[in-house]
Length: 497
Image (cartoon, rainbow, N blue to C red; front, side):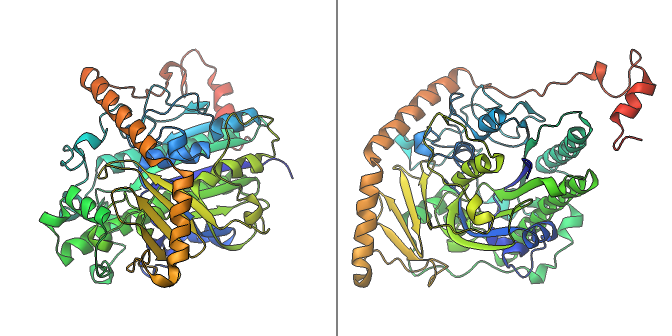
């Protein structure tokens, strides 16, 4: 088999639980459904960190956030960190990035040969948490309950504007890749912002759903864990609250924007069909993390509970089997999987990988591994949080909180913390010992706090940051007077006559 192209399509804040592909009875995701029907669906995929930037950095490198300084949404990501884009460049791919990746720092490519759009969020240190004052309410940029209370339809938002630009630029790029006289395979990563809050959707997507069909969040557990209480306080949920009507509005808009993202996925898959690339392109659909959507009385992400930490992961294309994979896996596994897809025996990756290749499982083979790790070092905590998911059990540790142990198979809503259960004492103790062996929580905390203090100084002195300006050359685009239109027209026509 020739080396395939790769199209990686990412949503933002999309929990698999809220897609038709993963069994939700209301949410319509026909493009992802069709992708899963002709490919493989991973049923226990997690983000490495339940926050945008750390999760994406970790996915790009195949390494845990603490190994690359990916502390939070304002952590500068070193240009010296090898990424899957670097590796695919070395393997002979054309590498292109479109849309949001939340890179912070002066390097806005991180291995991609070109980028089609600027990011939707700032590339500077504006969003730096402050563990020196961890209990204080974060500034106005931060999530609050207005996304829930103001949810509804609108004709335009900055997020709709952004995804429209990203989608059109990616469609055009796919045609350009087909028109180019270049036999090299391509790696095109495109990242949309929806269904990330604010929960506002265009009418055509909003009207896909009947208000009375929207399900409400599940009941609260018998006792909330300390971190969920911190999240509720940080977003104002413990004081502002919300009504069932507001909850349905927010969920309806989220479902609508999930369908909107799915529509863009379908548009890109259609271009692959039109240009004859479907049979030689591996397509991967996923997200950076999920959204609690009111479960446990919380919204957004930032926790290791299922709605926040799980991600959809669907793959289809040449060599990929059809079916589902139950094994626990992670976005960290995407980079080593792409190395296998490229078929490149790179002599030196530049750094050890924490992820594993999912290519054997995707192609119908066995995967002996059924575990993954997660880390959270962002806002609304004062100490690092660690997660181990292995088989049916999930263990969550934070130095400031009691340990948590859940049996995901028996208790998918995670209402019963079994860390102190006598019948699981040995399991709980084993996880605790493993956390102590894997992580030096005190040393990581010192690194996080030192980084936060330095970044706050730099941001106060130079707030403008490093926004990306996509290169354009209007004087040589389309048709210009110095061009031979009879030559340019046929060159840009696809397929050629």
